[in-house]
Length: 201
Image 1: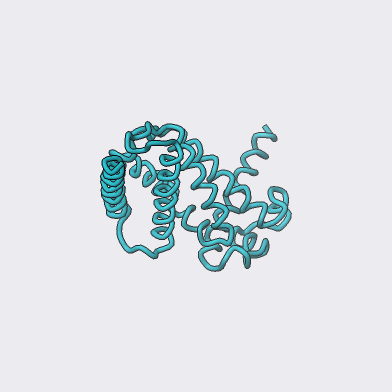
Image 2 (image 1 turned 90 degrees about the vertical axis):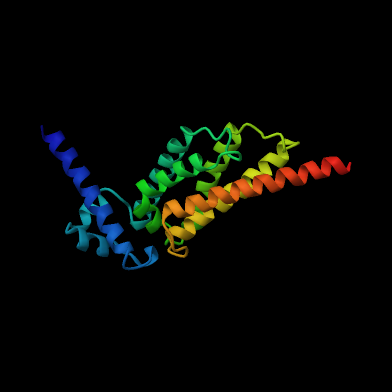
């Protein structure tokens, strides 16, 4: 009985610590957040914080790992087989991921760790796409296909990141529609360009 109570108390403390961290991150950059900031906002003592995390970076590392694990699992359930022909359903899955974790992604992207975080998110998305994509006929080699996937997916992640950071002023649905149209137009031009190259040979 005592173990269950202790477990519930531990879960509650972690929840309070995280919520306090998220709220503080709205007020200052993560580099300036201290344990004191967090415990004051969470209304807990320092020993409670240190019972769960060695420092603020330990807390951030845990959150980022959980985000990446969740992203990996989410993307692992998506088959990108005909992405270039019909990109919108796949982009809508990315929107679902962003929408479900909007505040968390937005807050994490404000930190100096964002570059590393973005690289890992891109890697997860790109590798999943390459693994499940049925290569369109326009790609004559696996290199051409991989290059196109890295180009498009890297750009897509960057665009959604700009939206999260408030640089792009539109709704997620509007953004997704525009990205889908762009992929389709680019796919069409790419296909036509490669056909022209073949005819010229």
